[in-house]
Length: 129
Image (cartoon, rainbow, N blue to C red; front, side, top):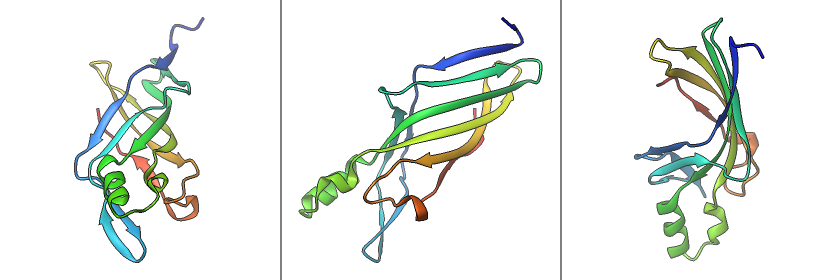
């Protein structure tokens, strides 16, 4: 085993976007309300830490949920499946910091969803730690 390249498995992820994201629906822009991001428990998320290059790479299989938006749609009598979770794959990379934290950013591939067509919906992960 090369000790400079360490494989990792991501076992926990919990993030919230308190302000949510804008959603265009039937010609109107609505707020999603808070957006929560967690690991898709049914899938494997992993990566590698390359200490020689001081780079981290990870692939997160995530679930995005909009609980307030789902409640709004349900209150309007709209099929709640339109606000079902969105499953996605985040592919990220970034520097390994001196404190062994990471500054990751990357692209996001969204799974099929009735409200978020893949051809006109995009997402990404901005640098952070």
